[in-house]
Every structure is written in C-alpha cells, then in structure tokens.
Image 1 (cartoon, protein in one colour):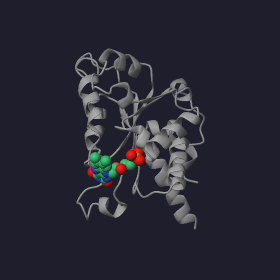
Image 2 (spheres, rainbow, N blue to C red):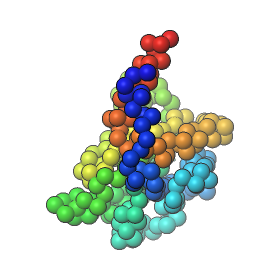
Image 3 (tube, helix red, strand yellow):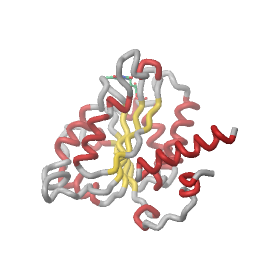
Image 4 (cartoon, protein in one colour):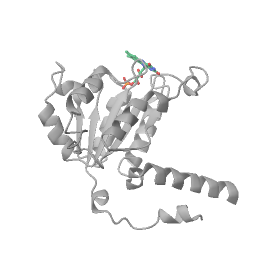
Length: 215
Ligand SMILES: Cc1cc2nc3c(=O)[nH]c(=O)nc-3n(C[C@H](O)[C@H](O)[C@H](O)COP(=O)(O)O)c2cc1C
C-alpha cells in the first residue's frame, strides 16, 4: 500500500468533520413529476445522514426568496449539497436566483463576508444526455466544464468545492439504475475525506495505482 493509501486509515481529529451537518437543497421545478431527483432526495433522507432536505421550488413557488432565512440556515451547516437536473446546460433558474439573492456582499464575499468560509459545496446532478456527448469531443464540453461557475462561486466564497457527481442518461435510466446511483450518493455524502478535494483525489489515484501495479 502506498503512503497516501495508508493515510486514509488515520483516525479523524477534526470534530466538525466527525459530526458533519449536511443540508440538501433540491432545485427541481416539479419534484412530483421527477423520476430521478425525487428518488435521490428520498434515499438521502432515508439514510439519516442529511440533517435537512428541502424542495426549494415548493418553498419558493413565486421565486421570492427569504434571504435572511436562507443565510441563517446556511450558517448552521458544514456541507451544502445542491441537487438538480441539468436544464439547457445549466441549473434550473431558481438555483441561479438563489445564488444571486443569498450569496450577498459581506455575507458570502467581501472584506467581512466569510460566513461560508470552510464549508463544503457538493453538487449532485442528473444529466439527460449520454456520456459520449459530454466527452469533450462531440459537444466540445464536459460536465465539470458546465459546472465551472459553481466552482468559481465556491472559490470566491472560500468554500471547498467537492468533486461533483452526476448520472448520465437520466431519462432513460431504469428505476434500478437510479436507485444504484442514489446509493452511491448516500455512501459518499458524509465522507469527510471529500472535504479536501486534492487529498481525496490523490488518495483515489494512489489506490488506483496500487491496484494497477499489484495486478
Ligand atoms: C427544460 C429541460 C432542459 C433540459 N436540458 C438538458 C440539457 O441541457 N442537457 C441534458 O443532458 N439534459 C437536459 N434535460 C434532461 C434533464 O436533465 C433530465 O430530464 C433530468 O435530469 C431528469 O431528472 P428528473 O427525473 O429528476 O426530472 C433537460 C430537460 C428539460 C425538461
């Protein structure tokens, strides 16, 4: 085993990470008609790992976001999960408005604006298209490219941008596949190693290298 592989076995010393409070915000225009995001939301709730899960379009059907309430909620959590379907190569519009309204100057950024500093930002995305289209060749783009604005937002607000996760062929996926992906999200959702994306990536690469060279 490599040094990086061994490091993952060390006990966690950070108390915040051990008792991580997770907030899941689901932005789907009509969750009652959703196959994928509704199921994933339920799986995450059933896991007991998410302290609070919210259907944001049900909260704000008129798009009038209660900024103070949202900011107070954000302050209480260590890891913020944004879950949404990809619509026109971007997020559904309420999520954009939520970012515009809630991440204000001197709250999320600016000389005094450090209320999100050190929190984790995890994206979970359902994608209608096939992997082949988003390889970087067919459409000259990839999902991480499309999600770049979130990464830059995390940078500006001093959040840790966790490696995003997604599922392709969302409309064609069978209930079993949807369930299987949901189980993966449940597995990783409270993984404290993800809070340091570079360490997490190094560790995964090291264990991949181990299995490659051991084989
Ligand atoms: C208005 C709209 C726009 C969409 N745009 C895209 C898109 O740009 N790229 C893509 O791969 N899929 C796109 N899709 C497919 C959705 O991503 C897919 O229906 C969704 O992820 C399925 O999740 P759900 O079952 O929770 O609704 C779009 C769907 C709708 C309704």
